[in-house]
Image (tube, rainbow, N blue to C red):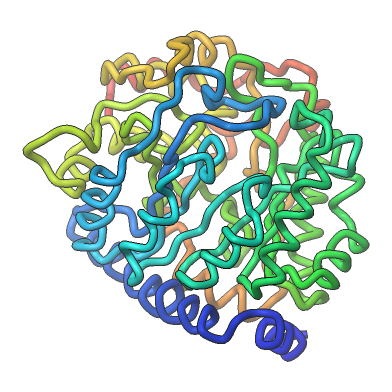
Length: 435
C-alpha cells in the first residue's frame, strides 16, 4: 500500500511541488514542532501552526456556518498579513492554514502567498473560484495545497451549501487543480445528510481514481446562530468514522488526515495541545475558529505575535481549562465552562453579529471525539510514528482521568436529544480556583 501511495504521488504531482511539500511542510514543519516542544518545557508558548481566516465573505450559505458571511466584507490586508507571517517565521513557523469565508474571494490572496516562498499554505476552499488560470498560478508558486470541500452528492451538496449547482462547480475546481498536478486534497464535514454517501470505500476509490492526494473527514460541529443540530452525528456514527479512517489508512493508497486523535487512539484538541490557534478576518486571535472570543489582536501595536499569544491570559486559561476538563471538545461537552471563562477574562465577542455568547450559553451539551470506552489505535505504523513525534498531546493532559468530567462524550443518546450532566460542578471550581 505504501509503495502504491508513493507511486501515485510521484506520477500525479509536479515534482517541484513534491519537493516544496517535503522540505517546507515536512522537514521545516517538523523542526517547528520540535521548537514548540522545547518552548513548552520552558513554560513558553507559540503554536507551530496558525490558521488564518483572510476574509469573511463567501459565495455560499452553508448549513451551520458560524462565519458572518452575509455581513460587510472584512479581510486581512497584505501589510498585516506579511507582518503576522514574518513574526511567526521568527519563531520557526512555516505552515499556515488559509480559511474564510471563501479565501479565493480575497483578491490579493495569491500575491500575498507569493511573498513567502519559504512557507507552506493549505487553502480551505469550496473550489468554485479555482479556474485553470488560478490553478496554473498555484502550480507556479509551488507552496500551496488546495483542500476542497465536498459535502455530499449533487442533491445534498445543494441543500447543505444553500445554492444550486454547487457539486459540479466544486468538481470542476478539483479537476483544474489535478490538471496542473497540484498536491490536492478533498475534505468533508461529516453529518447526518452525507455520512452514508461519502464515508465509504467507493468514494475513497473515486478520489484515488481522480488523482486526489489526500482526504480529510472531520465531524460536523453545531455552532453559530443557525447551528442545525439535527445534522450532528451520534456517538456511534463518530466511532464509525474513526474506525473507517484507521482501516482505510492501511488499505488505500491515499493520505487520510485527522486532527483529533494521537497514535494510540486517544482523543485530543489541537488548540489545547498548543499546536494551533486561529486569526479571524478582523485580526482577532482566537483559540480555534469555532470559539469566537478574543482579548488580543494582530493589529495591536507595540507587541509582536509571540508576545501577544504567549502573554494572553485568555488563551492560556482556555488551554488549561480544556485540558483539565476533557480530551475532547470543551465547546461541545461543557459550553457552560467556556462561557464562564469568557466572562472571567472579559473576552470580546469578535463576531459581526455580536450574539456569540448568547449562542454559547444556549448550547445543548453534545458528544465530541472523546470516547475512552472505544479508543481506536492507529493500524498504520507510519501514521503511529508520525503522530508520536509530531502530533501527540505533548503532555498537556498529564495522564488526567476525564471519565467523570467528560461524561457527555460517553453518552449513547441520539445526537438530537438533549442530555444532562451528572458531574462535579466545574463552574464553581473555575470561579474559586481560576487558571
